[in-house]
View (spheres, rainbow, N blue to C red):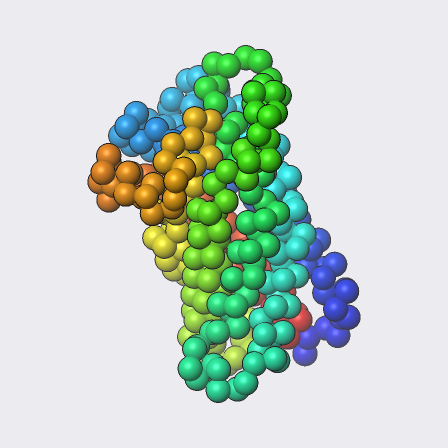
Length: 288
C-alpha cells in the first residue's frame, strides 16, 4: 500500500528526487547534448558523431563538452522542481474530472493532457535558459572573452525577443516529447504488468522500457529539435516558422538533415530515460 503523504508532501518529495536526478545525470548527459547541438547547428561541417566529438575536444578539451552547462544546470534544476510533481499529480487530477467513457474514446487521455500542460509550462519557463545554452554551445570555442556577457551586450536593445527566440519549435518539441514519453511509458508498463498490476519492475524491465521510450521519443522529436537549434544558435537562421525551417533543412540536407545527430541523441536519451523511467515508476508506486 502506498504511503499516505499529503499533497504538499508529495510535491516536496518528488521535487527533491527530481533535483537529485538532475545532479546525478547532468555530468553524463551534457556532453552528448553539446555534441548534438554543435552538429545540428552546422550539419554541413561534420560527417559522423566521432568527428564532432574529436573537433570539440581538439578545440576545448574536456571543458569544451560543458559549454552552456551553467544555463543547463539552471534549466534542468528548475524544471525538475515542478515537472515531477506535475507529472505525478496531473494524470489522476485529469482522470478525476473526466467522464469514464473518455478512456474508451481516447486511451491514455490523461497522459496526453498532462503532456500538453507540461509542454506549456516548460516552454514559458525554460525558453530563455534553453536559448542561452544553445548560444554558448554554438559560440566558437576559440572566443576567449566571456561569451555570455558579450552576447547580452550585443543584444541589449532586443533582449526579451532574443531570449524567447525559438519558442515555437520548443513548444512543438515539448508537446510531442511529453505526450510520447508519458503514453509509451504507460503502455509499456501496463503490458509488462498485465498479470500483476502492482508488480515491482526489475532492472531488465526498466531498461527495456527505457530503450523503447528513448527510440520512440527520439524519432518523434528530432525534427523539432533540429529546427529549435537553427532558431536559437548564435547566428540563427530560418526563424519565420517551424515548418518553413523544416523545409529549408530538407532542401539543403535532405530528410536526414532533420535527424542530424540522432546517434548522439539516442545515447543521451537512453541515459535520461534510465534515470527518468526508474524514478517515475518508483514515485508512481509510492503515491498510488
